[in-house]
Amino acid sequence: MNKIRQEKLVCTDDKRIDEFLSDARTGYLGLTDGEVPYVVPLNFVMVNETLYFHGAAQGRKIDLFHANPNCCFTVSEDFGTMVSPIPAKTDSAYMSVMLFGVLEMVSDLKEATAAMQAMLDKYVPGYYEKNLSQSHVEKYRSSLGSHTVVFKFTPSVRTAKENKLNPQMSFYPGRNAGMDI
Image 1 (cartoon, one colour):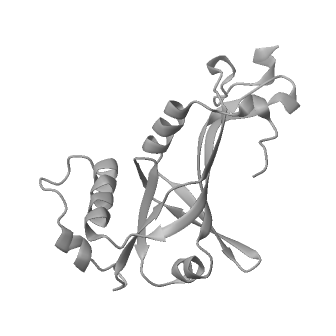
Image 2: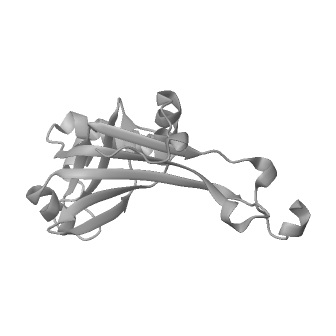
């Protein structure tokens, strides 16, 4: 694994990284299609250092997964632009996490149901009165009629970068360089 070039941006605070992954709403699954990368945006949930998501049981993602289960999952959030009277010093505030490892399909119905319930708890907390049943997960079909599969990804490598927002340098409409000289 390559080392992060900008060492000052490396985030090693596990608690901060875990909170970021818990709160982030969209991640990007990177798979390999021969020599071409294939990246898919997904909703996801982290449970005990394992990432879960679901998708159709057929299609390009499934084909690529079967050909090569090695993957990368990236989560990134933009926290705004920080300005400077010197154009080259204008910068973005962000956090990003990259996870590398082997993707697996969840075959255990109890684990799949728990993962789907965790996703509901994350994205629509308190909306449903009852927890998800195993029979619902087992029988669920997508709008296109495909069976739904739950995937799990326990990363073997995790890297994180963060460029914290300096509120005094935060850009807002109407702010111009003359105001900062």
